[in-house]
Length: 342
Image (cartoon, rainbow, N blue to C red):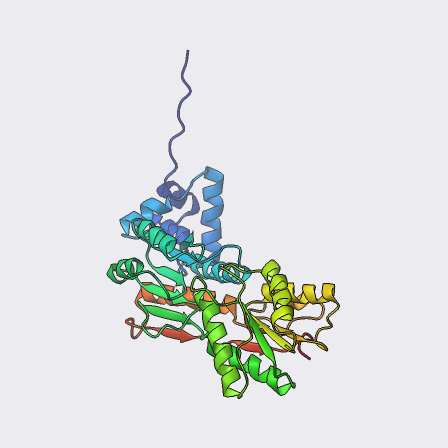
C-alpha cells in the first residue's frame, strides 16, 4: 500500500518569502509589535492562514525566557464586579499578547495559598491578587517570588508589592452622611461580620465609624453568614432586622445583591421603599440599576481597577516605572444616589 506523503511544515521563512518581507518582520507581526505597519501585519496573517501556519507562542516565549501569562486570583468567579475586573485585566494584557491564568480562591485563605503555590510553579510573569489579607504561607511565597506582585481592591498598610485599590472603610462614609442628611437616624447594616470577607468587614467598620462620627448609635448590625452573601441572605436579613430593630428607618447593605434581596423582601412584606425605610447597596451592580426603585450605591469602578492593574503590570514588566519598589494607585469610588434612598 502506497503511503501518503506528509506535507512539509510551513515555516516563518515561507511566509516571509511569500509576502516579500524578512522572517524577523513576520515574527514581530505575530508578537503584536507596534513597529510593524498594520497593512504589513494584515498581509502576513492572511498569508499564514492561507498556508495553514500556526504561530508557536510557547516556543517563542521560551526563547525569550518568558511564559506569556500573568496569574490573577479572585475570591469568586460568580461575583459580577470581580468578573468585570478580570475582563478589564484580560483586555489590556491582550494588547501585549499576554494571557491570564485565573485562580478562584472561594474566599478561603488556605485555598488561595494552595493555588498560588501551584501557579508559581508555572512561572507567571506577574501576579495580580484580589484582596490584601493572606495566610502567612501565602505571604512567604509571594515575598520570595521574583516577579511583580499587585494587590487589588484594597489599600493595605503593608502591601507585599504594588497596590491598585480603594479604601472599603472610607468609601461608605459619604453614603452614611447622605442617609443622615436625608433625615435618617436609626440606620442598620446588613452583612460584613466574618473574616472570610475582609472587604465586607472593612465596610461594616466604616459604617460604625461614620455613624459614631455623626453622634448616632451604630449597634444595628445584622449578620448574614459566610461569604459570598447574596440576594437570599439579603431577604433573610430584612426579616431579622424587622424582628430585632423595628425602629430602623434605613439600611446600608454590604453589597447591591444583598440590598436587592432586602428590597424584594420589603415588597413582599408591604414595606414601602424609601418612604418606610431607605435601602442602599454597595458596588454599583447591574441589578441595582434596573430594580424598582433603583438602588443608591457606591461605584467602586471595578473595570478601572482591572485596567490600572494590567497597565501597571505591563509597565513593571517593561521596566517603565520610575520607582518599582512600591507603586500605589488609589481609585476614588463615587456615591450614586437613586430612588431607594430619596
